[in-house]
Image (cartoon, rainbow over all chains, first blue to last red; front, top):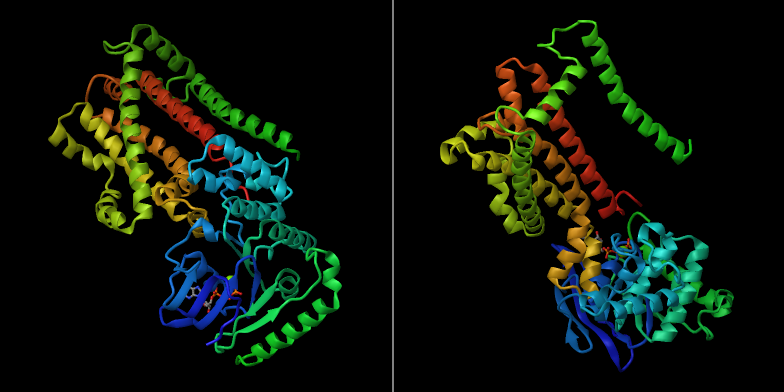
Length: 262
Length: 260
Ligand SMILES: Nc1ncnc2c1ncn2[C@@H]1O[C@H](COP(=O)(O)OP(=O)(O)OP(=O)(O)O)[C@@H](O)[C@H]1O
Ligand SMILES: [Mg+2]
């Protein structure tokens, strides 16, 4: 059993297990997330990052153990744990502002309020002027911004992000990362961010959790120590950044070496 | 080729092709390749149409014949569309609802509607109800199946996104599943109107004294081929108008369809 995290957890996993039919994916995972923390999940492909995110989102139920959000077991999906999908999963039939205000629509808020939220969030993610556009009229990076704005408008306690920037080009990705850090600082929202990129994890996270490969059980944790403001692009060249990237890289390669066929 | 040029070319060909058929028809009949009983000339058919417009056909005005047909298809099609969409949505979403309808719908589907008509006449007589029921049945099955396929094509991520943003099960249905299925539903409506018109004519051939199908049957009994043609062309044009109308609506309603 492994236990990480601070005294005021917003989310706690205690001996969390998950199996697809007979295939174990997560076994005996214990960790906790502090409110306001930016946590990145790293780990080899197939180790269960998406599964863990789906458990937190409430799309899947634990096979065993406990997963509690603000002290209560998670029983299903909800806007307090809203998800940004890699595919975007935008509603193609709704305009940008309708997508953004979807949570308000569900809560039957008046049109004026939905419009106001649409405008405000569009500005926050740099999409002013595109409120009345449809997703198919946007670039990949812009779609991801809508995905983020849509989640922020729901006022989540935790924002769950599964490789949201994997499908955009490097320049756009870096811009989006920097904007996400600004938004994190501005909203104080807890973020769980799944990525394959060590650089991305080190640049974004306060804390990195490295999941074990399917054979292993060994969770690793790294606390990132980079100067504020975290969104400064120079951080990508900072000695701590470079050192941490190397540490995690070695660690992951060692993990891979344990798996037959690598 | 610029989009504008391409578009112009498209419409030129789309209009030229029926005109060419018309010209062939005209030339063929003008040179006496066929007797008027086998193939009347376009001019004769237009003359017959004008005559029906002025004097009606077989004791009924032109409008009464047209309205009889339009009314049958309108009622049967509307009921079929509403029920087909509702049941298709439910079948696509809930496996147990699907289980209820699976065998009856699949058994009914391959039976040609004309095979059901004798039964319907036996049960409900030869009046309006039988005609509408047979149209209803075919359109209903088409719309239901297409709607169901539409529901199946919903991306699971969209549903998860909606749930995670706070949507209730009904809101998921209304804001995600229904719009996702809409392109398929519109396809179902277009296939359905075509089939509905086909069966309308078949049903009208069975009896009654009003309707475009009745004109065709009655005229052919008396070898009035030009009137047969009037009926055929009118039904064809009705079909064309319905299909174009639905496509026009569809383009505006599901504007996002087919875009990456
Ligand atoms: N629906 C499913 N049914 C059965 N097994 C599944 C299902 N989804 C995932 N798995 C299995 O669970 C394991 C973990 O999958 P998961 O998607 O969580 O991995 P991941 O860490 O997100 O991988 P990646 O980095 O490639 O996205 C994999 O071995 C996969 O084969
Ligand atoms: Mg994954």
